Amino acid sequence: MSDCGDVKKVFVPTDTAPRAVDPSIPFTATPIAIEKIKHFIEADKKSIDTHGLKIRVVNDGCSGKSYDISLGLLSDAAAAGDKCFVFDNGATVIIEKLSYLFVIGSELDYVETLLMSGFQINNPNVKKQCSCGSSFSVK
Figure 1 (tube, rainbow, N blue to C red):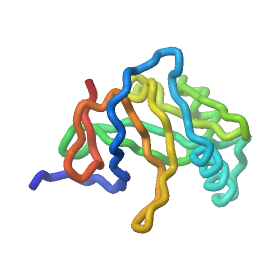
Figure 2: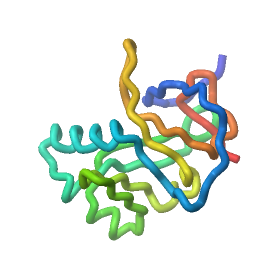
Figure 3: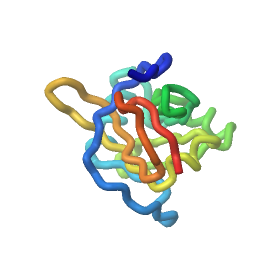
């Protein structure tokens, strides 16, 4: 059994086949993910005009990398040079500048099952995942 380190994230594994990275589509999100971003920002008594969902790729877990997802200030993202993707309802996904190359071509989704719910990143750059699905390595 492998050691997944201090991984505190939970991901729902996908059964989708890997897809080629399309550089003309740098990052997308499903309609449910976009609505959930807005929901979580408002539930935290923040505004979609000042906050977004921030995604970072960090060195963690047994496969080398994992996602860190939190709410972040748009002003901090602009000052840091992070990538921001604004969607139709005004919700913004912030991708940390150094993490962007790891998630280009990815799609953010929100999955609800009987056992869990949460954001999931369908990333075509992933070469392999650990058995628990919490960490990954890229091509």
